[in-house]
Image (cartoon, rainbow, N blue to C red; front, side):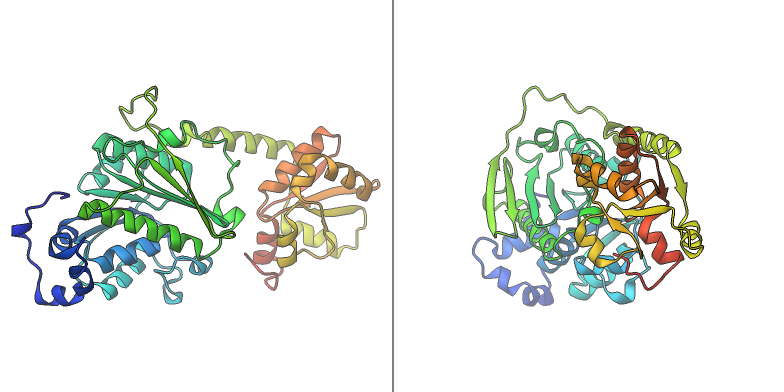
Length: 390
């Protein structure tokens, strides 16, 4: 309800006290606080971006908040997903978020959607809300959220993060651009690593999520200039902000329906190619690797294709580091030829994907090898629990 009848909305005595610092800000005042109380916002994801976003929207007094998430809290989330706590590890994120939000502001009416958002349910979930905030971390869901917002004419407050860099903007607002104006086509699968693969500074999503919350409040209250038509780029390592102008592309194809976004982003095709590649490469389990190592065999070389900083965190005894980027550039291929010296090659990474890719490149160079299924993660889980997981 972006244009509510303010005379019909009343604040309680407790709400006057709670929001007193808003009420004395001229740009918000009583009218702005009533708009916040009347507003409804859907947050998709309660991860790094969703955590600060939900905390501040609730504290600001947004009357109705929807939360979409199907995941459970993992200990690795706690470095950045500040809405969750240690006692909630293993439990649904939406329940953890609900508990924390009601601790901050029991006046918020919450609607929980413990489900994966999809082309089948997106329109039904988004339709009752004034504003949608995208806190997701993958391209299929971002395109899905964008297209659903376009079809329903909902503002889409966008943010993304990676390592030390973040982006934020507002899509589909006041005839402004949408996500497809920024990314007409998705990148090839695997080209852009996820936070689980590439890492992220834990503070970064707090900054971007708060920017998303700020834009949401500005849209609700009708104050200030939003990021619509501007892509904000933040570099935490160098503490810089930049802006890029975004404009709607008049030649962009019209969005008329929701599609299969996994297919659109090439996920099934990439999975089939990876499965085909894996079938062409020998594979062994970590248990089999341990048995081979314990047998005293010396006719193999175990190569770790992770990055050097990962190798510092944890390593399998006797492994030699040859990072995948070096193999892709060609320098690592020559190094592996030298260290093999007639021995057979066994390769591993964190979970098996990068080592399979490395072995595919090496096979093209005439070097056969065996991939360790599950990588060092499986080694830690099934062979040696003292090896740290990350």
